[in-house]
Image 1: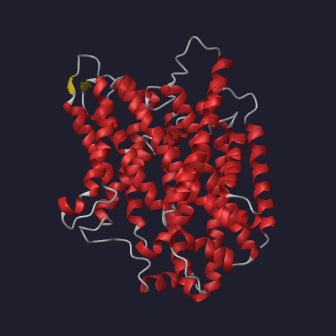
Image 2: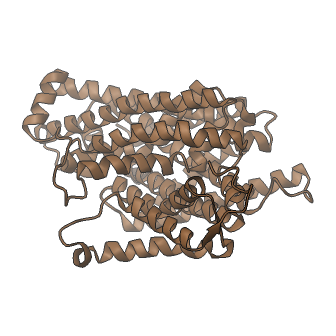
Image 3: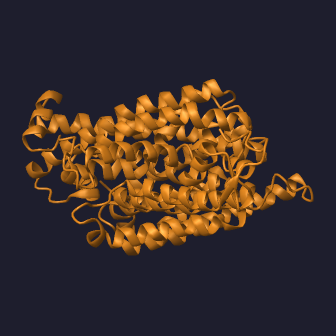
Length: 489
């Protein structure tokens, strides 16, 4: 298919996003940008969050990983279910009770200003790295299938896409993203199920027949029983629980949308609905991966990992499927970047600059500052995406989860200490603990062959990181003064 036609489809899709942004951002202010005026519809938030949770990394990397790990990702998915239930009934009641705009304000109230700033700082680092890794993955594919043939450099593609995202999030923020995410999730899921349907047709198989074929080739195996393996099923399930607790429940981007719902009850409905939909969708992505690896040898496709999905669709399936794939791919790209830039702007302005506490600034001045921060994060995104381009990892889902283990571990330790203890901290020492724990984890991982023998660390590194932070905080803590632990849990 002509790259020019594909490029026109990209521009048309973006025009639709701009129309939605214009309709939803009229009369928007800082409250609209940060928390959508706490008037978001829980059903829209739940559906839109599917796209944010999945992102381009899931769309491309989860099917691609089936070649190496079969359906092993389902082990993590089991943990996700328990994790979302914990977020809904443990963390959300706390956030609503304190009426938070930034969830890291809890750390300020409970543990002190340095804990608060450390939590917000690690969120900014984690979301910057995770979001730009996801953005890189999709931009790289768009570059290969469209922009290279048009002579557009990679940096130019990234700059234009970030410019597009800025245009429709600049004014409305969360108020706009709730609606654009709904549109993007619809397109992404339609692309997923359309590709499954076409591949089944190309293979001439029914769903039961294809599953039998996958089983015979070892593509549908779920559980890994080798205790020493990084993919051992208990490790993966427990890791899945803590991934959701941290990457959803302690993540400002995800919670910013969730707490934009008016009531706690509706917000909990949002998360439980999201959980049910995610189970169906993620299992469908694994099934799609199995179909891709069944079809690849038939079509003579040798690509694996992140490259197999675009290679099969763009090289061997009809033009209609290529268009559907492109729209779905773009739809997977935008939710992982637009929400991240908005949440980073919110956290930086509220948590680090204290914009809501500033009495020396007018509302107009605050809005100007917020817009400048928004532009600044877009510039940082461009720089980091170019860095991932130089690294060029074969599987970005592995990179993203590894980054999460290092950057969300301190958040896990901070929140756990605040909620599980009644002790106060020597606040000025908190940054040393939160920075030191990831460094110790890096040393442990680097020397694991000598220290752990045949055992290999996997996603449990997130929990080790959190435990180290918790232990360090306990070491610099003292008994809570009477009456000061009211918000601990």
